[in-house]
Length: 154
Length: 154
Image (cartoon, rainbow over all chains, first blue to last red; front, top):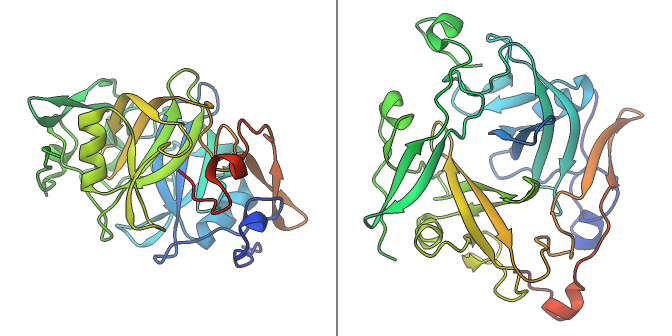
């Protein structure tokens, strides 16, 4: 990893302009990352990056995240084959979020459940409650076969 | 606000299934929210919701967030007129992120800079650095006129 990121400007107009990318990592050292499919724009997942994951992604063009549960760098798809090639990276007005437009290799699936997207359920207001309904149940791979019984997702 | 959310299940299969929405708020009490335009799927913004903002959004169908900088509920568009009507809400496999598909009233602009989306800049790898370039500079409103000199965004 050779890229380093300068500290973010305190000046709003500088933060909103051009120049060097100066991500505003949170207190946990992470920025939120939104991942969409470059072909049709579908939202695939939301993940998090620390400075190392962000630098690896910029340098290699392959999406790397920071796994909060496993507390380590996570090269998405390393065990499932569903690597994400980054076609475009964007950031938002205050540089605390990243957007990746990717194409997915392997099974063309991003969710560890085997579905294309992690966002396979709607939330609706019914009877004074918020209820979940599955709207995509197509499994592109069998998680037990891909991850083994340990079920470690990648 | 009448909706309350049950604590998330410790069982992975329950967390990934149907039933009541049981959002996994972070240590800061927030879930990440991704906002796209229902018409063309474009990514408009990333924001955060606490339980109150989430309940208000589910109940009213108008997007409410929690402003971390102002530390209060933020009815998006209250001062700019750019209210967001929620056409669909989704959550992801581990229920720690929310996706809103919205239509935007007023100027049809979401970013406080007057642009349609907060993600108006690309990040590219050049000369061993990560550089920002503005790819959408169309202003749908004049922030100084809309927010006044205080520049409080909404």
